[in-house]
Every structure is written in structure tokens, then in C-alpha cells.
Amino acid sequence: MNTGNAVCAVFSPTALLETQQFEGTKTLRIMADGRIGDKYEFVWPTGNKTIILEQGKGYSINGMAAVMVAKENFSLCARNTESGNTFCFKAPGDLN
Image (cartoon, rainbow, N blue to C red; front, side, top):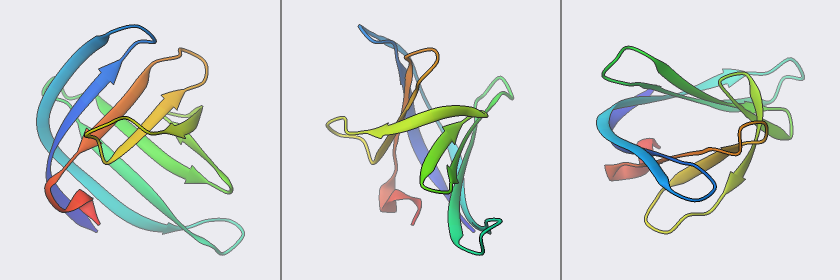
């Protein structure tokens, strides 16, 4: 498990909605097929959590299907395929 400070941002399809700095955690987990996958967990100042899981060959964000996308200046970004919003983080050392 790796923990570190992260800057996180949420983007709608057209604008930046929110940005915060807080602690994030990356853990490795064993999936049902025996492969190892990543779990990223971020706790917002309100206590709400954003969780990104590797799900087989895909990803989920807070239990919804997600696709990984690239955004300049961020380490990792996941777009929620239902809402269209994208959660991104950048961290010293990229939590890896």
C-alpha cells in the first residue's frame, strides 16, 4: 500500500468542476481470476470517497464503468461512462 498527497480534480465534459488537495492510497488486490489489480482511494475533505478499481481488463470509478483518459499535467484520469465526468489526480511519485 502506498499513501501520499495528491491534487485531485473533477471535470465535466466542458469545465473544471472542483479541485482539492488531500491524501490518496494505492493498494494492490487479487482479482477473481488471480491477477493483481490496482485500487486507488481518495478521501475528500467532506469525507466522501472516490475509488478507482481495475476490473479485469477495464476500470470502474465508484462502482460505475470507467475509461482511462489522458489529461495534461495529471498522473491518472478516469472518465465515468455514465455521467461523463472525469476524475484526475497528480501526486508526487504518482502513488506507485
